[in-house]
Length: 414
Image (cartoon, rainbow, N blue to C red; front, top):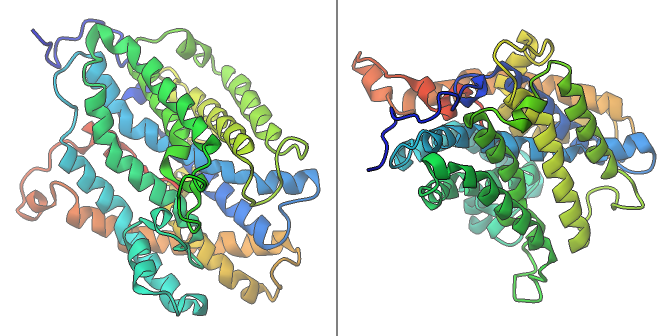
């Protein structure tokens, strides 16, 4: 007979604090990743993403997207990993409730951005209905020539939405790997991540893919980044083993982060990887994506696998926590803000002055993100999230912290 959720065969299952509940240091990492994405876009627009070693570093901070994808994989998968480790039947969460929470979290602020980008930027004045609809529905990566000014960065959000939609299918696909068989979940997830690296090696355009589509920004290309977070979720839910032990000591984080720095540094070597925002060869893209998965895994591992009571003084700090809550807004609005930052600073595009434009973009994006959080994101969550109708009737609202999607309010990516 199948076990119920109370039949935990191993008392060490889910004992790491990140297996459930809010993890403050992850909010700090989310803030770091958001401003990393902002930095790489500023570097590109100021002509500071290629050439010198420091410019190549700025230009490759787009790997912060891997961190966002892995964060989403971790936070949205861990409740299912814990459910399976306990040998519980079915899935940990109703699919419709989960999907509703994702739409409520992402779409209100995103739709405000789409309206602003189309109405404020003259470059978008001639966009047809198809382009409007593709951007409004976050399907632009699937529609040829649908990336528009002020919204080019939203390709990654389109990829995230595809991951959110597929996630319930992944729950069901691994439903048989529970209880004692849950040890096979990590190999299964890792295998999918490794196989996905071969996406870039297939000549999709020769096989009939429309020229207006970029095969390097389609969802299957980034399965390894989500898999990195999902594997961390499985490790957090499992009885602590060797990998968790490697993260247990408070100084071990520096070893993990040294590997992060080495993998990131490898992507900036011009003899190995093309500089700037270009369409690389298939093998180069696959190698860079693999290194992005290493960066995301090793950056998050010390936090995701930390033992109870271990603190991260900077990442746990109140300022970074606040910026982490606003990070979705920083990601959403910074490209549109960057468009106007050159006018505010009286600096031509691609003429250098990166620090000036960076400071303007950071300052304005942070303010706009705070406003977006206060006036759009939080009111939408309160009004439309599951339990909102009960709150309006004055009934108890249940236990939102039972779901990882609620334990950290900004489980979205870049």
